[in-house]
Image (cartoon, rainbow, N blue to C red):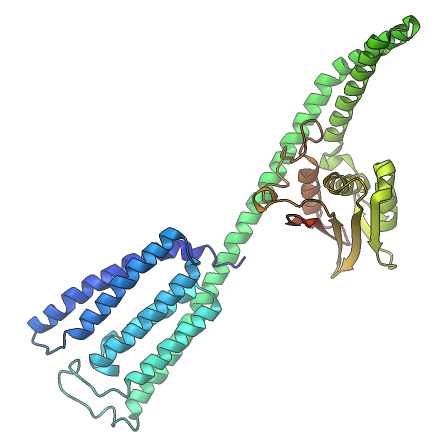
Length: 423
C-alpha cells in the first residue's frame, strides 16, 4: 500500500466543497468586474462554473456509489480544473491575468494527496497551459491594452520568457518539496502506527504471561489432585472389571493431562523462559520434527546446502515454527504435504511454511495473529500459536506475515536476522 492511499478518500469531500466555492466565486466575479468598469465577456465565467457544477454532481454521485478509487477521481478532477483554468485565462487576458497563480494550487494539492505520476502529469499540464497563454493576445484583463509584451504569436518577449521560466521553476520546486514533505510525514505516521501496534502486542503478551502464571499456580494443585484421584479410581475400576467406569476415568485423565499441557505451553512462552544461544538451522529442523512426531512425515523441507546459524532462544524458535506448521497441517488434507522453506536473504533467514489447503478469505486473514482468534473447531486450538509466533519473531528483530488465496492455500512468511536481532 502506498503512503498516500488513505489521503484521497479524506481529501475528496473537501475538494468538492472547494469547487462549489469556486462556482460561487464565478457568479460573483463577473458582476463585480462589470461594476468596477471592466469589459469582461460573460461566457468564460458561465462555461467554467457550469462545467465545474456538473462535474461536481457527477463526482459526488460516483463517490456515493464507490465507483473508482478516490485517487483517480481527484486526479481526473484536477486535470479538468487545470484545462478549465487555462481556457478561462486565455479568454480573460492570457499570461497577463494574475489569477494564473492558481495553477500552483492544483500542483500543490496533487503533491499532497496523489502519487508522483499524477503530480508529474498535472504539473506538466499546468506548465504547458501557462506556456500556451503567452500565445494569446492580451484581452480584457489588461486594462491598459499593452500588447507589446507578447511580441505577436511568433515569439515571446524577454520579460514573458522570464515569467514562464519562473513559473516552471516554482511549479517544479513546489511539486518536489511538498511531495517529499508529505512522503516523510506519511512514513513517520506508518512508523508510529507500527510501533504502537508492536507495543500493544507486547503488552498483550505480558498480560498473557501474567495470566498464565497465575492460572498455572491456581489450577496446578486442583488438577494434580484430580489426576491422582482419577488414577487411583482407574486402578480400582480395573480390579473390578468395571468397563464403563474405566472408560470415564480414562477420559478424565486425558482431559486433565490436556489442561496441564495448555498451562505448561502458556507459561513456557514467556520471553524470559529461554536463554539465547547460537543454534544451527539443521538442529532447529530436527527439533521441530521431534515435536511434530508422526506428522513430521508430511513435512517437506527445502533448504540450501549452506549452513546457517541463528542466535535465538531455541525452545521458543522451535515452538513458533511448530505452531505455524501445525496450522498448515490442520488446514491441509490428510495426505497433503506441507512445505518448510528456509533460505538466506540479505543478512537474515527467510522461513516460509506453505500448505495447499482451502485458503483464508481476506477478511479473516486480517485477523490472523490476534490473541485467542482461531478458525479451528472448539477444543482444537486456543488461538495463541500464531500470536505468540509473531511476537517472538518481532522481538528478535524479524517479522511474520501471511499470504493466502482461497482455494489455493496459505503461505506464512517469517524473517529473522542471522544475528537474532534485539529483544
